[in-house]
Length: 244
Ligand code: GLP
Image (cartoon, rainbow, N blue to C red; front, side, top):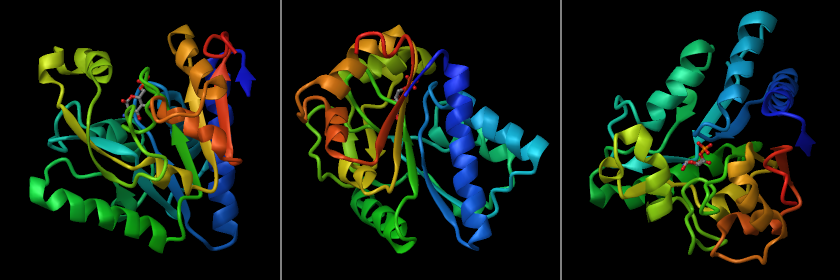
C-alpha cells in the first residue's frame, strides 16, 4: 500500500494496531505485538501515544516483544533499544512493564543461546505474535537478520553487516563505537506472526524496497523471504515505492 506521505501511512498503521488491541480487549484476550526500532516506526508510536492520551486507548492487555537489541548493550545507554522504546512509547502509555520484552544486551556470552530459546518459548506460549511491524535496513535486513540469514532462523546472536554499522554510526558517534553484534528474532520467528507490516519511507529505501518486493528470493536479501508469506503488507510512502 502506497501513501502520499509517511505521516498518513503511520497514522493508518497505528489505527490498525489500535483496532487489533480493541478487538482483543472486547474478546477478553491479550494482543501480542512484535515491535521494531529505528526512525521508521517513530510516528506510528507517536500516534499510538496520542490515541492513548486523547482517545483512551488502553495498553493493559498488550504484550510486546521487540525484534532486536545490540550486543553488548546496557539498557540505560542512549543507543539501547530499551531507551528507544521507553522514550518513544512505553513511558507514555499504560502498558504493564512485565508485559514488555526486549532482548537482553547485558547477558554473558554463555547465556545468550538459552535466553534466545526462552524468548521463542515465551512468544509461543502466548499463542504467537498477532502482528509484527518491521522496518528494513539498506542491506535488506529485517530485525537484524543480515544477508546470509536462513528463512527458518530463530532468535540468535548475529554479526552486524558493515553497512548496518555505518548507518548506525551517527547514533554512536562513529562506526568504531557501534557494537559488532546483536540479538535478533530470526526470519522464522518473524514469519510465524499472523500478520506482518513492513514500513519504509524516503527515496533512500527505494532500491532495497525494489529488491525486497521484486527481486529474486535469496538469503542475500533476507527481506525477499517476505515474498513467500501471504500475511505480509508493505506500507510505503511514494518515495520508497518509486522504483517499483
Ligand atoms: C535497525 C533495526 C531494524 C530497522 C532498521 C532500519 O538496524 N535493527 O529493525 O528496521 O535499522 O532503520 P531505520 O528505520 O532507522 O531506517
